[in-house]
Length: 100
Image 1 (cartoon, rainbow, N blue to C red):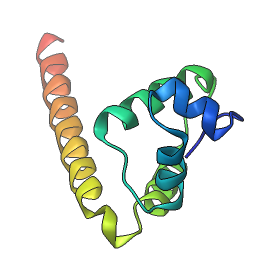
Image 2 (cartoon, one colour):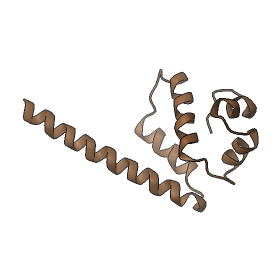
Image 3 (tube, rainbow, N blue to C red):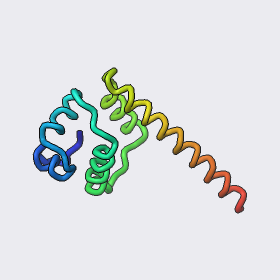
Image 4 (cartoon, rainbow, N blue to C red):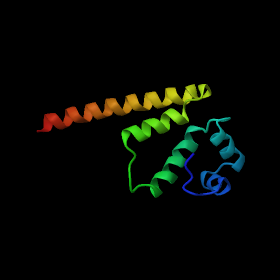
């Protein structure tokens, strides 16, 4: 889990969870709830907003983070999110094309 140099304790406080939860998330022995993932993304991406990862970098991070068989539910949720993104992107491109 990217913590931008923060200790587990500090990062846990920012996320509103216990340090032991961060430890379990990082070791893969527990999966964080969606709310924690969203908050984590906000914290990390507001600091790392200078550079977006390439598609390949992001894919590698996903492969690594979700490789454990116990993360099947998270992989399914991510797949649905990507499907929704693709659908919205396709729909918005269609609207843009009709406006030209």
